[in-house]
Length: 228
Image (cartoon, rainbow, N blue to C red):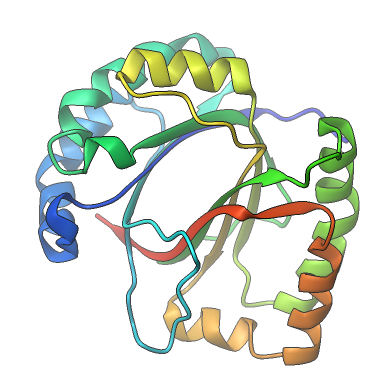
């Protein structure tokens, strides 16, 4: 596994009153303030796409805020998490907010897109963190990337560090949650995502590779469109 040059701080949450339209408008309203709180580190804001062609996961999520840090700026994570509290807590159900951070690995050359799939999950019980990370980085990526094809514009694996995530959650003011992975995959739009996932045999191969590796009940995910 190569040495990462970046970390990502991710906040996942549900909209106040389950109102996605209001969540989008509120993210637009506070977007500049979030970017200021992030101290010029790159920010991505997302709202779940609830189109009927999409199959919702068992544990969905309405929105996400992501901040990406160069390694030289990791000391800023706790302060930025604290600064995000008044901005995000005002548009989300406080009890739904989950925060994680860790080193980020870009598994394909990064290109920009307007739709991204965000997933958080734990490793399968009985699997060590080292075993899980080795599988995810070295094996699963090589299974998934060819199936998803050239429409996959970015694939970021965030290998969650629990101690750093606990510090960020404490600074924000929410309980810490235990995840091993925060996974990001980016496409141009919803249609590109659906086309990328249209190989049923290939998708079954991806799912089979996850058996005994990912704790399925722990998954929290949604396809999101980026909010500017």
